[in-house]
Amino acid sequence: MPLNLPVLKLNPRLDGGAVWRWWRDGLLAWLPAGVRRWLAGSSRRLIVALSDGDCTLLREEAGQARELARLDRASPDWSAVAERYKSEKPRQLVLRFPAGQALIRTLSLPLAAEKNPRQVAGFEMDRLTPFAAGQVFYDTAVLERQPEQRRLKVELTALPRAGVEPVLAQLRQRGLQPDALDVTGGRPGLNLLPPEQRVRRDHWGRRFRSTVIAVALLLVAAAAILPIWQQRQLVIGAMSKANRLQPAANQALTLREQLDRSLETSRMLAKKKQTSPPRVNLLRELTVLLPDDTWLERMQIRGDNLQIVGQSAKASALVGIVEASKLLNGAGFMSPVTIDPRFGKERFSLSARIAGEP
Image (cartoon, rainbow, N blue to C red):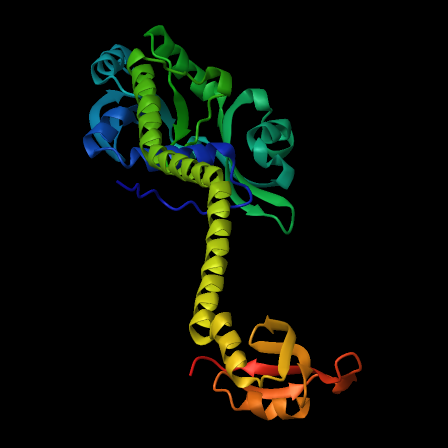
């Protein structure tokens, strides 16, 4: 079954984490919806939202917030918050202050600060704000990259520690440690707590789900890769077998060509034999045609050419005599006729083309 994975549009600044998340999300999308929800775990957050007049306890889940309780701002019942935390079992506990109590400022930083704008803002805090870095809880959010100007547009959000520390202390007395500190209407993912104070909750259920996710990803990846690997092995095996058989195939081809040439030669000889008269017939024909005062010293056949050498009382008449044969034509002397002084005969060399059986 083919996998329909989302298309990844790469950009020059795409990091390894983004690639991993794309690959993980694409493989998980192949799993049933119920399994995906279980693996994702709870997204519930318990929010303690403070305002000038009261303290509201909110449950946020799947982007929807619901009010659970409203406490007196002057003397909140933090024990009730602790009980609610135990019953809700949220993924995060968030402490939220009004945006009016925060200092929110847009900064222009060097583009090189993109990897850690929070740290750079901390170094420049006393120059950019009325506070030193140790006097505020703060965080940054990148608003815009400006590569042509080599600048980075960043939003800085800072809360004076003087107003936050007492609330954190009261929560900690009830065994509550917020995972995040933000402001009403703040940027998504904003967390003003310093990194060393951000709680990393490591429940066994989350570890178990992480293990299951890893196993599921491996199984899905194996299901996707195995057919490709099997096809590759088949191709490699076929190529290896073809390479082993190649010498034998070449030898067979050579033998086939030799056999074809032999058969062609045999056919030509058979055809020639059918169309050319046997030598005995030619010899009989010459015996009949040549006069008694003529004898042959040598007879030679090359292809369809007959050559005879001998002596005759009247050699000049032999051309006409040979031409009268139905087996021969194109008769002619190969050299001038001479007189043999020993026998007083005319010595001749004559050739003719073998025409075939009559």
